[in-house]
Length: 191
Image (cartoon, rainbow, N blue to C red; front, side, top):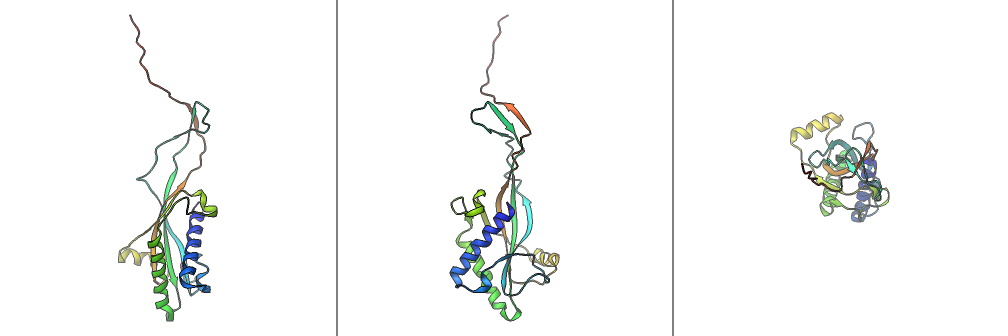
């Protein structure tokens, strides 16, 4: 599911950037690649997964699912995991094109400002299995930003960090089956 969400966002950015800028070769492929000196070519915008976190606030505690509507049994399954993905979009341009790198990051921010919620009707292809993706700008302090670039072993370049919310993962492995409770009553017994 993670690769499906990232591929959808990459394709959406490619489409939107081509509409805004024309068909420039450097914008045709926003690659899923780590941002470091060894693997990054110049003159591209890169999408990199930085962190995965579980959304504990919205954790569903419903362990019971009805597999067959005609049965009186409920299946016991572990609740789904809701994930937040932190993605870094970085503009890797040659030093003489620093201004172009700033323009590209501005385009990325504008694109997600224009549309940051993707519902079932917006998701295409393999991404149809996803429920909803919400892309929020994630602001870091200067110290956090410095630590991020140090951890990646790269010099800072124009970049923006986004939090992609509510990616659901569910195995649906049945752990047990329980009889459905259809009513509660009190039986009175006379003595």
